Amino acid sequence: MREVEARKEKDSGVFEDIARQLGLKFKRRPKPQDRFVQYELIYPSIYTRTGNVELDVSYRYGHSVLGTISRPWPISKKASLPAFTVNTLKEEELYASKAIAMVDVKERLDFPNEISLFTKRKIRHLFDVYLLAGEALNGNNKLDLKQFRALFVLFGMTRIKNFEYFRGNAIGAYKDADIKAELLSVVPRDFPVPTVDEMKWTVRKFLDQHVFTYSEREYRFMEDFRSGYFRPEDLFGSGNMASMLRDTQYYREILGKVAPLQKRGSPRGKRASGKALP
Image (tube, rainbow, N blue to C red; front, side, top):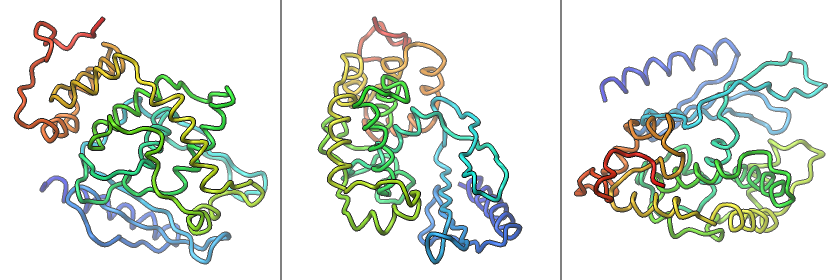
């Protein structure tokens, strides 16, 4: 924790310097957590009276499953700034995180009773998954749905209590008032924005058809995890990705919360080596 505190202080200085160079107001959100902190960069906005960039910084063994990629940022032809690129998650991991973020969560495993990046059910998550769902239901998949589902299961089981019982009706309690309050300011003026009921219905159909149709291996992963055994090879095969996930401290910590008294051997006896099942 001493290392975390030192890192938070260092990072805060970097963000504050960036805000100063850009002429923005820098503010730290209240209720600082042990390993999670929120900042705001406040700027004049053409959409609302005051714009802000939210910075959510987690010090809880942050990791990416698929790694990051460099993508060009979409710049309007009318924009006054030159084009640039951003380092971002791959689409399957990004959308899996968004889908998890819109689920109505009663109890978290990773941040119990604390705020976190994925406990804030922002309506933009519902809107983004709605756009993805509309394409997928029409056969125009923009990503690998099999990989998306595997990540959805991984994130759900390791972040949400009783996730294995969730189905498409587990979407959060959004309201049409949320559209005006949070969504319209980040959607182009000429882009049609559906009602909350329309978005939820489309997303529910997508989840029931393409996500909550678990395979035998996915069920096996969930059953093992609840018994205190972490076997990511059931989701991703026996390659480097599964090895990386098994060695990530985050999952060891979560597994200790799920089944603290379980031994960390294999429930299948001779398969304790962690090799992929047939």
